[in-house]
Image (cartoon, rainbow, N blue to C red; front, side, top):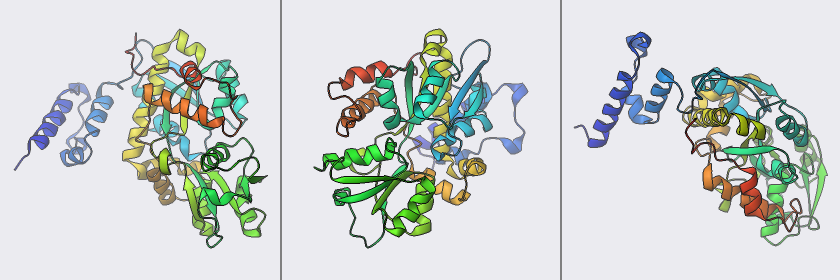
Length: 362
């Protein structure tokens, strides 16, 4: 028997099919699979987007934009997928991806000065330089869940509180994962500067440092974190979706301020296109992993798909939710002496965030 919900979905699917222009009608073999639509109702939206343009398409001529990202970071899978699966094109954008390997300050300077139009990065690495005044605005979060803290099994280090008096291996002293777990430690009553000692190693040597006993715990981000955990059979103490952070995003999209002022529709389009892509990644982790595989070293598609499933690519807050999350991070970064103690967190969050998605294109 057909339930009301099933009938509603079938009607919506039919409406989506009727919306496809006659000249663009697909052959029967490529027609929408109604069972697939019932399993994933959001696919109805994708049918319409494919046929008639993306929901965030900028009006007028196609915009050419440059998007900076780290091509080897699984966090930025959406950028690659958006190009290959046509999400940028459907939103009237011609996006050139720029693989950026410099420092955060250099990246934000590149965006602020127009060498790039947007970039993907980590909130806990961006907030300090944004406090200092770079002309870059955060337009959305991308996802959460890519930072991990490990110890060796049987070491007795099973919680963040157990880091007291221990040596923690990090990739650099400003790393977002180092800041994040420092915040967690501070909330548990530790002084991250006095109760934890830090040693810096290249990411691919952190596992060896842990084996040798040079450090008693390590922290880093995916995909390398995931690879080390599986290769060395490590104990995952926590990640950045643990406890109160289960709904907190970590990766964000930044837009150059001059683009927002001169062509807000383009800023809205690139933001919306990436969020459409993130939803696709969430629904299709195996396909997304296969697309990203050429950018990943020392892993395979199955591992990458498992990473994507563990992240929150389907949860990418914007609007007041994101602004409040940014304010919470700003306040928390005071605990690890990254943000000035007299900084007003809500005011700074409001200054560095731009809500482009609630506005229709002009």
